[in-house]
Amino acid sequence: MPTDPNNEQPRQLRLLMVCLGNICRSPSAQGVFEKKVAEHAASQQAGISYDIDSAGTAAFHIGKAPDRRSVSAASNRGIDISHQQARQVEEDDFYNFDYIFAMDKQNFEALKVLQPSSAKATLALLLDYAEVAHEDSSVPDPYYSGEQGFELVLDLLDSACESILLKIATHPSEC
Ligand code: 4NP
Figure (cartoon, helix red, strand yellow):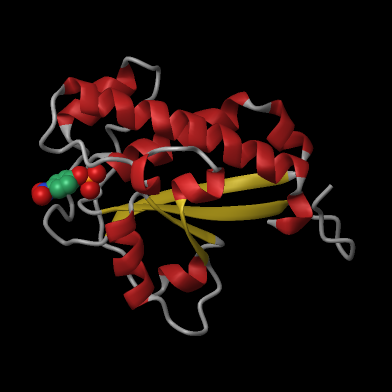
């Protein structure tokens, strides 16, 4: 059990999902991960609770709800992301979160530039960390794509979030 041996309190892991606009991929990643946590008894057995948030590296859509195509595709899979509101990544995120997961290489590079040297958060490409194979280790930007692009995003996120939860449940002391 990943409890603190001194006080036996359950641990909380704080995860931040990051894409460019924070209206398509990262809100979807937050929704997918939250649903998996709710479904997975294994993660509860590991004594870990989760706080999941999302943000964008760009400022274009601050304050907006997720893209209606992401809301609709997620809703078809029983995931409600409609209440989320876009925000931009800030320096404090590197101290407030345990993991910051970038949706693609471009945003990973942007985050590396923002990352303070004393950051607490582990910065990783979501698909690399989850060892989910896809071109360039990136969740493709669906913004200019058709419906298929939004389905692919959810397929990749489903697989990656499942894999991350399993990793945490089986190796909690490494997280
Ligand atoms: P996201 O998708 O990074 O997955 O939220 C995008 C949303 C908006 C834009 C680009 C990507 N945009 O250019 O406005």
